[in-house]
Image (cartoon, rainbow, N blue to C red; front, side, top):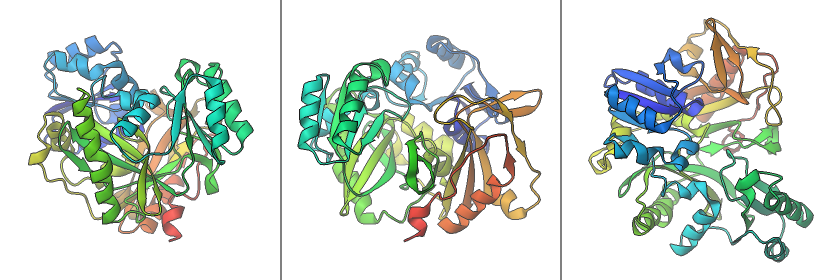
Length: 423
């Protein structure tokens, strides 16, 4: 099977890594990939989706997997399907679940899927009035795609009003913020769950927990994610069943009614409040860094999982996961998330320790390659992943690997998985 992965981050590297080790995969392509994906397969420098679909056709690509939200919202899946190609991901219509927070919140309300009380508006007066009806903290979200950064947790009424004003004026997120969602803050613990869907059937993956804040103890600004672990002990079978019956199933049925059957990854951002799962948001792709820790736990061949999801055959598949835990620690560049950083060479020490060699790996993200050397060029540069029989063992292994990786200005959190380990 020939497979192409669209995207250039750590998420796409991780998907490529499991496909590289899949005996069913004979050739692997990345479009455009990054400086390290060329270690796994061939990078394809084609940006235009029609041309990329033609490349897939000309080269006999059997399956294309879309990683990031941008191409999905742009309709890359529709373009590939129009040429009769097999592609894993939602249509442009279905991708609105992430592409528009207003669409998503209205969808949740329409199909009685548990979510926070909210208002969606482009009118500053209505937003201010609703803000005053809530208790702080207050959540303010830009409607459009903001690369995971369009959510403000305001700790005062004034901060919430400033956030709304800056979004609606276009100052904060440009056109993506010209319509906003203001919602009540839910007090509980946050989780990420991922359902692989084929329009009708789905498979729920082990629950993960992301660490959004830049600094230890969940301090500092929000980021795209500084680390994650899975599966989390904060979820039991009762919660899994509630998520399936109250959120995933009605979403798939609702999207069929909307004429946009959902295929691909449904990423459910959850808040668990007194044992009840409440939907914070939907995304329509794997989370990053959650994907980096879920892929190594997958026992079922990845090619089979993605192909059957893309061809509406999930009901014929029994998915298995390794009975282990994975922890991923993000290494970010010096100025992340405030500004770009000067490129810095990445040095990885030769690994002599058998435990590190066998149970850890690096998922590369914001990197470029020059003359055989890797350079840190992006905000989130790489993820050090450890796998083990317990969360603590996986966490310790991930941090052992972090000690082997060096580049100027590297920054990382030292407390990934703390919520599980303090249980």
